[in-house]
Length: 391
Ligand SMILES: Cc1ncc(COP(=O)(O)O)c(C=O)c1O
Image 1 (cartoon, helix red, strand yellow):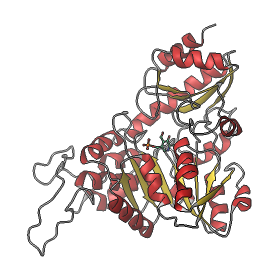
Image 2: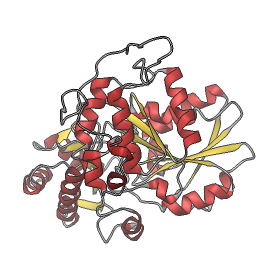
Image 3: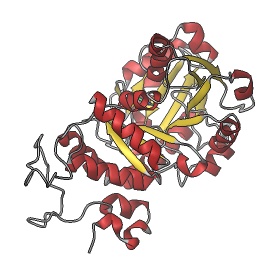
Image 4: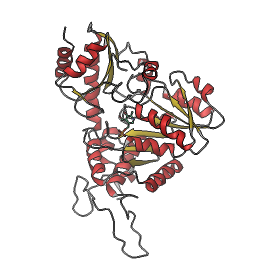
């Protein structure tokens, strides 16, 4: 029998089963059910004529290869390249751009992506314009003859607005652009952008894929072999590759993504509904609420859930700050997608790079908190928030 991933039965399996079985045959020596950790940086050649498939860990490693195979399968891509962080994955995509090229970036974008595009791409002679992903027709106005790539994300960080992925892709393709999509907030359990025409899907695997806030990583999933090869070669050359142990930990996390995500979604829905009716709250942005402006789009393009992230806006900044500092179950911390619930204050955290004017233009207000809803008991989470809001 060939490797598990070659098997027709495994390729035909559904998401939760694939996460546990693709590329994960019991090891050849001891039939260990859990993949062994190959901490070795180098692998012996049997002779000068017999080069091992994996010979040096920066280029490839069994733990990395296994995780790449699973993620590619879960995203429906031709190949996956793991990187040492989500930002390294985004940098790998930008490596396809050369001096004189132009990039289109959505206005709703993670602050780290914004920083790379605004501060560092110009140093390489790469210019950019912004467009509104909720109005794909704005792409035409932003495109120049030098435009080569477009990057966007949804649900967006931190506003949780949802744009129509297929509509953005259709417009980008009319202009011949390579389309890069950051799928970190949804995870492959809820959204598969390659099926909607995206060329390169990026994840910060630090978040839902690993899921336990104990490993930093990223990946690029490519829609075709040529892109997969180019990204892999760049990563090998620049060396932004993850350690075997980080890959081992991330695979351990990924194996339970499906059940974690179900609980994240259920808890976030309950928290959103509880906050929505509180008098101190001006608005709640959660794609699973029928009142969310993009609820219908989210229903159409997300599979079986709306994620664990939400944004809550209070009537005043003092309340937002009091809640940020006053919860006992939610911790005030950067990051998201782990099993524990976190509160972020975007102006001082994820979007600190932007000026206040740039934040306000994007609806990132000082009265707003971003919640990463974990897998604790939902009643404890709601009571914690209500206690901190007070009144
Ligand atoms: C949407 C999104 N993309 C990319 C990143 C960057 O990931 P990393 O911190 O793993 O480099 C983050 C980090 O918060 C993120 O939220």
